[in-house]
Length: 108
Image (cartoon, rainbow, N blue to C red):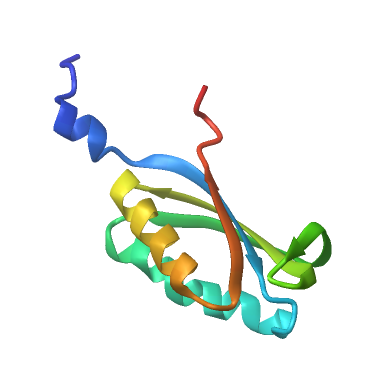
């Protein structure tokens, strides 16, 4: 088995978990379709979205932008690191997104 070059390692597909907290003033039924438009960034770059789980409205531990609640969504996906970075950047620019957190569940 040949060793991967640094460029191949950098561009390897990895598993990620993305948590998004959205503005509580949004309707919960519109959350998944609006997230889907952002997740097309992953699909267009050859990645895959494994699961979109909308947890619904939950109380925040502390207020974010004067909101005591937020709509939580958790997305499992496989993508290259650069693609996930671009997805996170685009979500952060959206005013209805209060917070994002990207994790690699297999990272140690």
